[in-house]
Image (cartoon, rainbow over all chains, first blue to last red; front, side, top):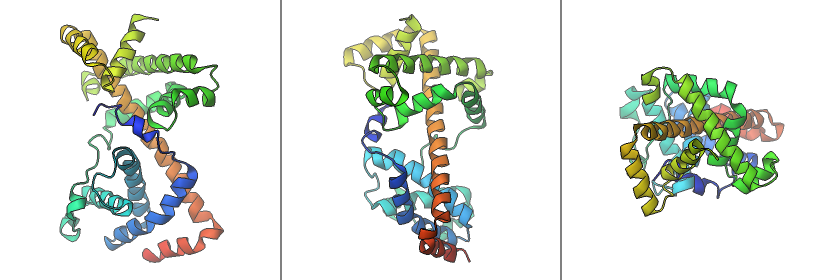
Length: 185
Length: 88
């Protein structure tokens, strides 16, 4: 699947404060219980739960639940993987079921230092464009809704703005990714 | 519309796998012949990766906000106690 192939599906599911709050109350206790059983703290549980939710909304919501397990089982599975990634010494303490073994964290989930630097620059120099592009690629907005929300006269001008922004961000990255290594990462 | 803009559009469709087989074939042939276009594709992929990073960051900020709300809402006291109870 292409890098954008997934974005169409995510548009189908509206992610609202209400739906997040509902998911939070329903699923946080299971993750908190797991983290507590590993002697982790409440902030640990919160961080892991947030990462698990981000990954969950990105993968399961778009492609269907790849582990063929319940939503709760899937999120708990991601949480276990995230915990083990940080605390490999706990390997013998965490038993992963078959379904959980089939869960993986996206390769690009933990950003490289140079990408972090680049993002900081982009947030400073191109925040408006980053917001627009994010809305277009990773939120539930279609170009039509985008035009309405952002106050463009019509879809054509919203689409034109999108490409302008893409060009702008590309140029920023081109000039800011100073070293070859940065660029190739 | 400028050539670079056309390229950006075309690259976007290529990365999204939205080109028809014929257009894809032509595009890949151009790609083979043009290191400059290869760089553009690489750059655009990188930009999309950065937008994804930005999206994740923003989404996590939203989750922090929801977390704060839930843990400060007097109506959600029993939920809070249930969680705090796990970390005694």
